Image (cartoon, rainbow, N blue to C red; front, side, top):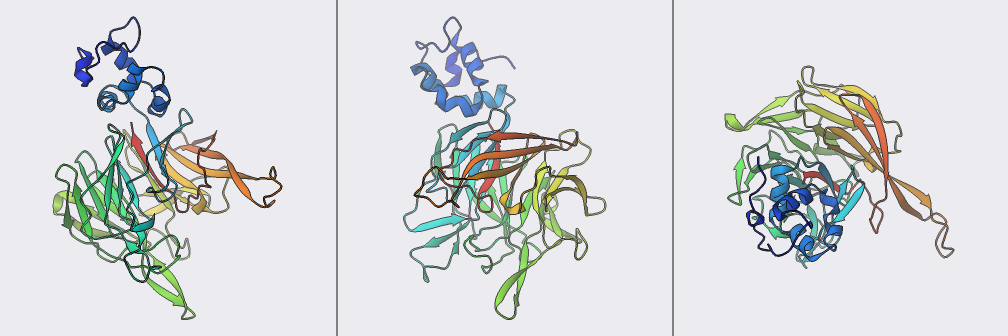
Amino acid sequence: MAPPSSFEDFGIQTLTLTLIPGLPNDLGALILAFVPYSHHSRLKSTCRSWRRFFSSKALISLRQNYVVAPQLLCIFPQDPSISSPYLFDPKNLSWCSLPPMPCNPHVYGLSNFISVSVGPHLYVLGGSLFDTRSFPLDRPSPSSSAFRFDFATFSWESLSPMITPRGSFACAAVPGCGKIVVAGGGSRHTMFGAAGSRMSSVEMYDIVKDEWVALDGLPRFRAGCVGFFLGREFWVMGGYGESRTVSGVFPVDEYYKDAVVMELKNGGRWRELGDMWEEGERRRLGKIVVVDNGSWDCPGIFMLDRGEIFRYDMTSNRWVKESCVPRKASDDASVGFVALDGELHLLTLLSVNDSTDGRRSRQHKRPTTLLIQIYHPRKRTWRSLIAKPPFHQPLDFRTAVLCTIRL
């Protein structure tokens, strides 16, 4: 594809401002479009023409058309209406903060929401929260809200709410279709280790029409599950359904060992797969990521479980050990697990005792570095990186929400 014929093709009417001295603006714009997205905010202060260019709506579309952009990691440390999300570029070890989500004065403590990216947009769906208008005040409620962050305008917008409020649900974008599917979920909040409702409803969001449509429900109630697409099939794995009590007092979840699959092109009917492991092998499904298979012969579905990486074998419907994590954490829940550009990334915060201030407790810990252990599935090799996190408060991967976006 040839470069645009003039700077006007970008929709920026600033022909009198030079981007790079000695070069036509269309060529200068193309060169600047190759600058990693995480550096854009710092470059805006260089000059007036760069501020206009890096703030223009057309920059994102220019990068989508001409730049093979890497995947970036978006981290939501906590409720995005009070705490800014961050973009992390692992290739350049750079961070970029995003504005907080619009705030509703009647609700607070949003957790267990899902974030998913479609093109240059970031979606935040559902979750569990506390509503000052409900009673009792200490009982969390599921949310049906939907928000979208547009990187072209660098702003949030409210979308049509889901038909059924839900948190802790399976969610994935339909590949190349402009639609998002959500399934299951409930009302559980991160402040409570148990309780909360479960549901089986499934619905699909049409991005162009800004509307939700109900689909065939899950075979059983299922919350705390993970969802992803393999071709035109929507997979839902793990999660919990019914619960039992220990000594008649303490509620304990009954975790699913199976998966269910819905094929969209055949009327959206579900088919059930058997258990993915034997009794006693593990209590519950670990953290799941799907690696973009590209030219692979089979999709790469990976699980982090007790410091080990497992690969899902579709033929046997079993998890096969792939590798051991070089530096294991004390608890998998404290590890962020994502797939970026065909590699598995494990993120762990390293802390040191903060003894510089005598007024503070010697046991007070402050996160200083972010250890990133990276596994390449095809080469079966490990490498690691160290990054400095910008968070003002300790990051807890037990409650933080992660997603990837290509910009």
